[in-house]
Image (cartoon, rainbow, N blue to C red; front, side):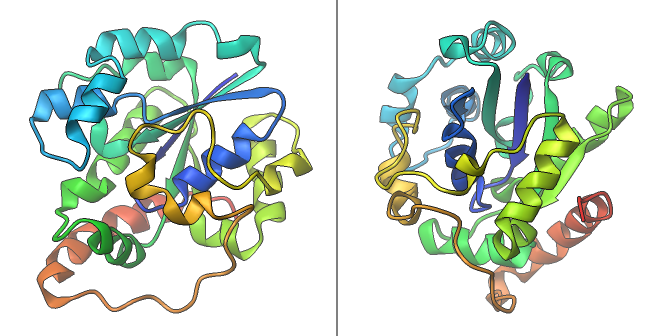
Amino acid sequence: MKIAMWSGPRNLSTAMMYSFGNRPDCAVVDEPFYAAYLKLTGLDHPMRDDILASQSQDPDDVAAMLSGANPEQKTHFYQKHMTQHMVPGVPRDWMRGAVNVFLIRHPARVIASYAAKRENPTLDDIGFRQQAELFDLVKSWGQTPVVIDSHDIRQNPEIMLNKLCDSIGIDYLTDMLTWSKGGHSSDGVWAKHWYGAVWNSTGFAGAEGPLPDVPEPLRLVLNDALPLYEKMLTAKLA
């Protein structure tokens, strides 16, 4: 099985990759379209040159890899994707062969976390618009997109991972609750900039507190993201 997990940044996505990566039957890949995205957009991200050198910059080659044989002959292939990477020029037809899961998080939390690492994110930086578009695309193919809220996972990882596994048709394993400190062998080269907190973890962080305050300059981004989040929220696992 191929599991395409779609989220924006700062959304528990790395912890989820570590969770699936700790399953003995599962290979994982970390943001395989990142280099292609940087090449197509020309954006200047932290570690841009290292990222471009670390992956294929050809989105068609990446799509062929994602839809080809599972790495290491594993039963399952978990693909951690950033929705903002799906710009024009990045193919989508390969998604038909995957179980598409949408990992969502309240935009106030995403904006506050992202802004701490990279100033003044735009709506496109945090991926909500693209996530909603991909959600609609999957529905248009007759698939039922699976939606899970990172807040619920942190509230009760065991229950929510059980529900997620059941919804995509695989067995839940307790291995998914923990992982080793120090990262995963499949981490992207950018991990040292973004993954510090997860590298120091051995499992999911505890329940989240109240929503953070969003600074005034970013409230327009929050207001634009909220209806997109709420649209997908109605379909979440509960």
